[in-house]
Amino acid sequence: MKYHLLTLLSLFLFVTPLQLVAQNKTLREEGINLGVLPAGKFNAITDVEGVLVGHKTLIAGDSIRTGVTAILPYSGNIFQQKVPAAIHLGNGFGKLAGYTQLEELGNLETPIVLTNTLNVATAIQAVVKHTLAQKNNEDVRSVNAVVGETNDGYLNDIRGQHVQESHVQAAIENATTGLIAQGNVGAGTGTRCFAYKGGIGSSSRIASLNEKKYTVGVLVQANFGGVLQIKGLPIATYLKDEKQAPRQEDTDGSCMIVVATDAPLDSRNLKRLAKRAMLGLARTGGIASNGSGDYVIAFSTAAQLRIPYDNQGAMLEQKVLHNDDVSPLFLATIEATEEAIYNALLAAETMVGMHGTVEELPEQKVLELLNKHGLLK
Image 1 (cartoon, rainbow, N blue to C red):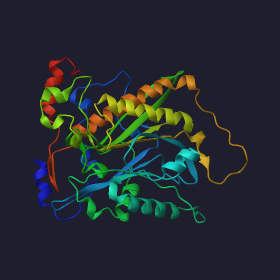
Image 2: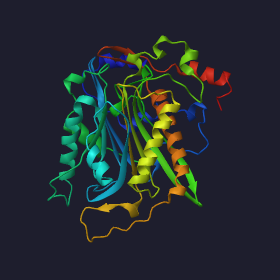
Image 3: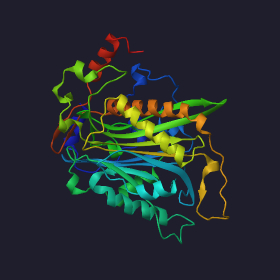
Image 4: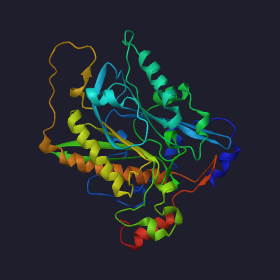
């Protein structure tokens, strides 16, 4: 299998999204339609117009299995034209740089970067330098870099802190729209999920509101545990795999969730949206355990809601959706989060790393179980 090649590598590799797309398997490609809302064209966070995703994947020798994933709300100077944003904390055993200022002001002014636990500081430095170097930011003296993480220390030599500022910069610079790589890529290279190989996963949903259509896209860095279920079927129980028992070492971990939408939501309703992502995680069997850092970052790309850094007046006028109209977006978030986690599992492949091997989800057995119970449709 492909994972045997990992032991032959001695140099850092960067695999572009286009190279990985053809290898990815998603829930829908396996004939499993989840939820009631339609997915977008790419069934990814990039279905939200303007959103870009970039990866830098680091695989070397027998112990380096890590990387960086960058999510940008749009291509341009985010610091000068900030976007409304909010964060929901599911369980706080993690590190999310930029949390307090984003919560206080309700806006995002940098790319969102995901990496491993011990390279958060490196990623902050890289995001700050990226921001300061942009045109029109010559007088900027404060940058709220938003950097999240999960711990990939089982497969990866995390103490070696192998992610460098150049890797973070590469993920940002290589970010693209359209199809994105999933599975063992970027910040998901060394992650585990439900005791199987985890990774990066993404999905999207389209919600209709008053004859208008809005898109919600989700990207996850899946590195958490619990008792896996799909479409309500307790997959872990049926597989009779002892790795799936709800033991402490199998449930701890983290999940970073990024929610994007083109709906005109302010930070207050974005926070409400972010809360619903945890319901999507729960649908998969995740339990937000004691040792899990589960954070949801939500932002809106609606152009009319951008907040200019150069304040031209005392009043900021914005038109946002009424509370009564956001429920379909809540459902979209739940469905997209759930499917993004499954996509991370399905796209991931068995990996050998520093402390052993993490097997991929036994996809064929899962499909047989779902088919047996009439759920494979």
